[in-house]
Image (cartoon, rainbow, N blue to C red):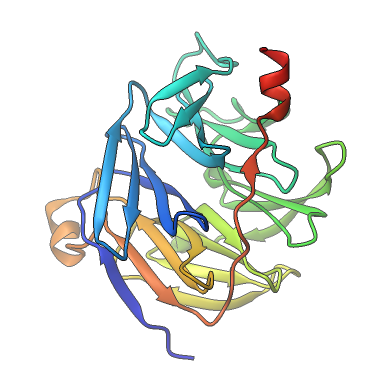
Length: 298
């Protein structure tokens, strides 16, 4: 099928990431990791609000009355004006060349986020789980660049990518316990395909992922087979999320940092947000559960 790709927001974002669609607000929240800032775009009005942040923001999720965020060294809750209202711990405070990166809220309201080793020293990054009571724990280590976090529609499979080795993994996911097991390779990128970055899942259980430095978005079947490849007008698409009134619009963020003048001339829309009409439908993003947090800190 022919897929229409539109530039929905032209912007020279350095490292646009973590798009999250709010069904309630009919707006897209996203981040610029390197600026650093959190942004909110209402595409019906064309208004984008940007809130500067004190440190890198690797990823965000919805929460009751605001957002949950993976900041450089830990987690925080923010209100809808972009103000940090509560810090929830800093599990990697004091570490060198390590920061939080991609993350997402799971179907039971926990927030998962992985770290990235900025100098790409192998095996020093890890995957963390932030529980509704505000406690964070390391769930799996041995990674280098965490990305691609998402869940199957039935909540039984969790996806996670290590960009440094160009592999996407699948885990068995226990929703009741918030536990992962049986790590296996779901899909793998060839050397000329860029690296796996941010991802999402549609109602058919297919997994959509952006190819950073690969200039495309790929849809995989639940069996890990390539179903569709969409060439993008930028070399660095970074992540994707379904949104719009019927969750049938795929929003794709992108990056412009460290591109040469020649690359920017070839892809002048680098850093912008794009919309794709794919025919697929996404799932509403869960919100981080804060009721236990309020009880613990009451």
